[in-house]
Length: 458
Ligand code: UD1
Ligand code: MG
Image 1 (cartoon, helix red, strand yellow):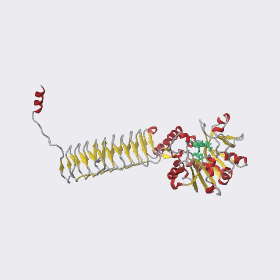
Image 2 (tube, helix red, strand yellow):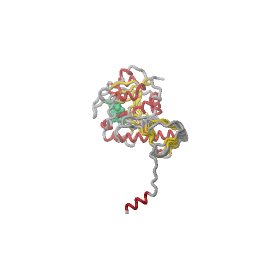
Image 3 (cartoon, protein in one colour):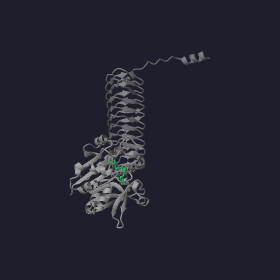
Image 4 (cartoon, protein in one colour):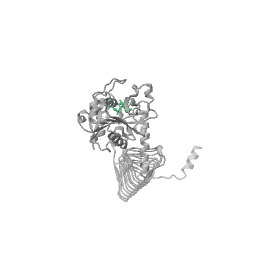
């Protein structure tokens, strides 16, 4: 097989996004656009991937790390100028070079593989990936001659009224004979409406030099959507979301309403897990089998075991075991470890806490900076008093402790194994194992006091 190279164009500012964030770093389903592109390219057998960076170069580099090499385009003079920056790394090489824009996050490795095949089979020096768009506005148009062969590409801004009616568009993805590409790039001029060096002009240059240029038409326009503004960003998000949801459904997860379920690109979901509407699963979340998530829940960056139920709750940056029940209306905040068979009920907030196997906080609690053993029962309304205004302190509750309702555990404090805390206690001292701690005012009953009061009021 001939050598294969890839150049990703990612130096633009993305003016039309009107954003502080550089365009190719805008996430689609939680992952930067350029990362989607490189993930797909990486599935192909490419000898060298070069990304052209410029605006936000350092941020783009740190996103892509060692997945590719980088060249810097100091001034953004156009897509042809961008590719030319890879000259030092690629110019002398024999082989085929794929060029992809960093703002086409939906392009798949299958389509790029087909493009390579078409390019090689037609012996072309350049092959452009095209698509038929319902609304081609903004895209470069493919100009074909009477025999249907590609002549050139005209940018929307440079196109005549007639040319603008053409709905076959340039997707911004191409295969080139590498040497022919770099030779032609030097001949591209910036004599156009935008005063830029256009990569698509290479097609016409090679055609005029008598070389074979060809087009590969993909049947799926949505895959080639170029994201230039926030409207296109939302369209890309919708298409990607559908793709992700269908992947999980084919993998054995049930998604009750895919139109209202938002799953990020890197999430993993086990079979027979049911996802209810209004649920957002984001970050590097891994959900086991037989779980029920949602409705209306947020799960971000969590690992969740099997058979766990999370209803109407927010769960972030935590590890959740198997057979756990969370919610409705619970909040699990970062750095928590919820072990198997735990129950976290309504209006319970957990933060930076290890919650041992089989333990329960069923109603209205705040548990922060705590280590809760196994088989502990935390009664309704009980809280850890973890903050003294300056520092956070640890609460330790050993196995099999029973904490009565409405107790305050003033940290730092340790409740020994098997101890009981009487309801309504404010515990400020450690409690030994198996002890009963009562830390509340003694009750006084004033007999017949009400009658006296009423008489006074008369
Ligand atoms: C480009 C194509 C257009 C095609 C469309 C598909 C050109 C001139 N036009 O238009 O024919 O239909 O993509 O989406 O190529 N970039 C650089 N350096 C630059 C300029 C751009 O790296 O100097 C990068 C951008 O970061 C972006 C990509 O190249 O990722 C495409 O640039 P963009 O400005 O989005 O081009 P379009 O107007 O979309
Ligand atoms: Mg674009």
